[in-house]
Length: 183
Picture 1 (cartoon, one colour):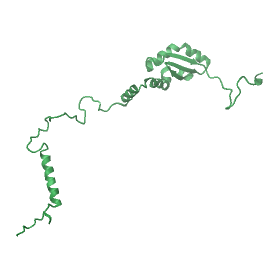
Picture 2: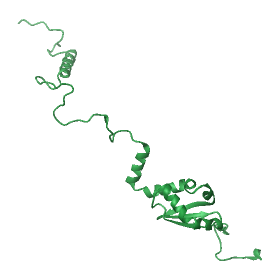
Picture 3: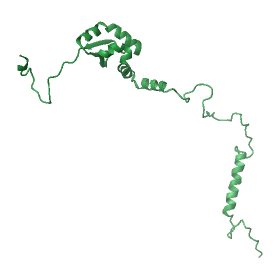
Picture 4: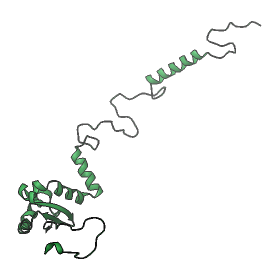
């Protein structure tokens, strides 16, 4: 019988070559790109809505949205409120802004020691300043409330200066001990 001449695009076994497979795949991809909805279907205009669920764009548009950049202070406030840290942060503000809240002259002679359950403990530099702070207690609470917010400080406890410690070293005897140097 008469054999037909082999075309250059076929292998001796009769199948297509690799280059022909790649060409066919490229043509199919180009056809799909021209009509992505499939053969015989009409594609909507570029601005017309498509059927099915509506997709959100990657940007928020003209109106404010949760995806818009947020100021750091607003994000920190939201984090503090969500975690329940409002009391701790308010206490930190009292300690950090002490000189601004009560004034430089009072801050020079009194320092905050602790804040628990609305009671602010102050340590005065002398007993005279401790007495003065007790007399100014209402004004101090009003200043702190105006600067930090209501309910953070409700009471003040004023301590005088700390007495010197006579304990030197890890071991000591309880009681008065020898007092022969004072007589």
